[in-house]
Length: 297
Image (tube, rainbow, N blue to C red; front, side, top):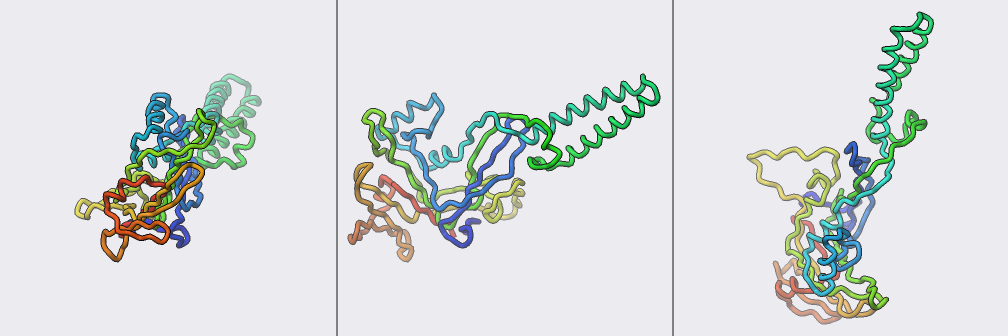
């Protein structure tokens, strides 16, 4: 189903990867994956959605009911954040290699102007320097636990941290965070802004390298498709259910819009034991609390 599939056969379970990249040497640490069953998205009116000072007015306006788009919330969730003072193995190796190169050059120049016995000692030191350099060059880019690095002072650099979807589930569930702390009242409040969500959602841009083969993260970009082959659209999802919360931040009632697969594009609205037909317009105008998307066949 579009390259997506639940981890371990569970339809709601996917993998969320953490990608950390050094901003100095551009090296990327091995991506670490954790399972998820739903994705909690902050809305523009919630704290932390848009930390940039230039966007604070947009965040404040969102509390007054301005609409936002689901794709904007996902983009904010996967947006890189800066990390300062992070140990970087690659920067440490490169710095040590630079030091060894300077030392080797000094030894070569010195050995020509000393006595034979002292020259022999300098030659042995030069050989040791070159051997250490070769060992460091052969290290993998993320070999942080190698014995060759234990005695070296680790270099700290700025880095970016980013979430990527490394395996998407068959059923993708989004939880929209509508509760926030209202500093004016000192209590939790509910964000009532409308979130514009599509009937069809493309997730390729939010996965590792724009959609890795089989839904699994890859450290290599995907190969270019043949010009004769039809354009593939991996990780396409169609809306299947919308959960709506009616009430305040502390209490209320849940209802749901559900698409009936056996009836084409027909929708129903479910509230307790009451089930009524619903139009697509009613579905798309709902104040969504949770959204369920099914991988397109």
